[in-house]
Image (cartoon, rainbow, N blue to C red; front, side, top):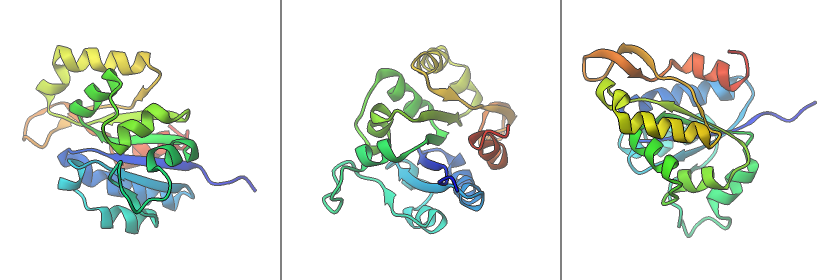
Length: 178
């Protein structure tokens, strides 16, 4: 019997972070092993307890956590088959484009050989901005996949490009069924 697919779900600071909980739940339900990384801004929208309960694993939050006997970013980087950032803010995409590694999630992505997919979520003007489009092109050039965004109703009440893909669609793509 093959081992379950290992997925790291990284959650950044967007109102769409609530959908990450459903992505984690659906991945676990489909038989994946899931570990979560929560950025400080992501923790403003979803709690580590929620992600830990749904993934059945502790949540990495701090690059310098003294309670971890292993360096979380390196351990998770070698463990993962897929690193899935859902939602990915334009700030996080910009940090990836620059190769920055100031937190667990961006350091993990720089350290992994696994497939990396980012699922953008932002307001339409942010998505359409030239800087964002340049950063998206750059991360694609680095080999990262960009899943979305979709056009639809946004948290601002506007309609446009920037809506996070629905959790079921993200999970289907993560499982190679899209």
